[in-house]
Amino acid sequence: MSDKPEPPLSAIPPQLVSLADYADRAAAHIPTAIYEYIVGGGADEISLKRNREVLDRTLILPRVLADVTRGTTETRVLGEQFRHPFMLAPVAFHRLVHPQGELASARAASALEAPMVVSTLSSYTLESIAAELTSPGWFQLYFQQDRDFTLSLVRRAEAAGYSALMITVDASLHGIRNRAQRAGFELPPGVEAVNLRDRPPLPGAVLEPSQSIVFQGMMTEAPTWEDIAWLQARTQLPVILKGVLSPADAVMARDLGIAGLVVSNHGGRTLDCVPSGLELLPAIRRVVGEEMTLLVDGAIARGTDAFKAIALGADAVMVGRPQLYALAVAGAQGVAHMLRILREELEVCMSLAGTPTLADITQDALYRPD
Ligand code: FNR
Image (cartoon, rainbow, N blue to C red; front, side):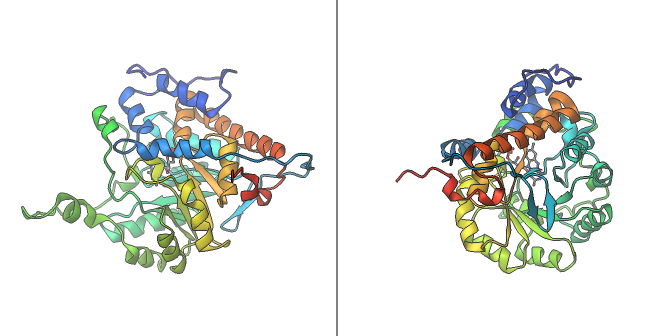
């Protein structure tokens, strides 16, 4: 870590061969407090660590001598054809780590035909990012207290050509971010939530001494199931809920006509002491059926991680922090390289496991000791 971060590299050194290499290298390119904000999780980081532990203890059972010469990583998600199942998760403020921010990430996603989910809290406008994207772009929505303003964000996303709305439902509050607090993280000058510039000022709620700053304060902005239904009735875009872990919530979402879910604990950054998305994926797949789109994220950093997620019921996976590490280290070419590594690792894994298509990757491809 450094308070004098190195500028992004202009060429990728041959030693950078995995996402872990980018993660290690990133510390030298990101100011300390920002690095801590990115890398950290909620409270004691139990969920953050669990995301990696669960992936590590899930093992693959390869089948040999299969013909994979017609192999492909192609998949259909929400009616769109994807070349591979890796997506860029919505991540706020890419300018924290690179002056070109989301514009560079969008160029990289386009080069690798990876869908990008653009955060409400992007540091370039959602329109300018869409202008860089030739791969599918989805817009991640954080509900705002002013519902008309929320709807105006949706209208902007529709006009800019985003093809799905991903509403994040697990982060109405930041959660307890002790690591970022200890490091004194705050947004540096020049980095802001540009999409929210025209947001009407919040009516300053005056709380009675008996009222809670959380329940009657911050949570008054949080959406409920009624708000989701309200928004669904006002857009033609498919709606995906991000941050669902409970099978009961998954059923409620499906019954409401929600097109897909991201089974996720927000990279271990919101409520601590929750299981990883991967752990709940099979149960959620069971209760919602085969039709509903299920994505998963949390610690995905290898082709084998994606393989495991697909075996457990995911249609595609999203990567969060690795985007920022690669962007900090080598800008757009770093993010493109990161995506290429993932795609190639998945192809190698599928070949060696004897599963030529994503449809062949079922729970039988995992090792389950008796
Ligand atoms: C996030 N994430 C996130 N999610 C979201 O819906 N909107 C957002 O603006 C952000 N912002 C954000 C910032 C940073 C710095 C991080 C690390 C994460 C969560 C993100 O979409 C994803 O769920 C996790 O990052 C996945 O875990 P990994 O891949 O980072 O382990």
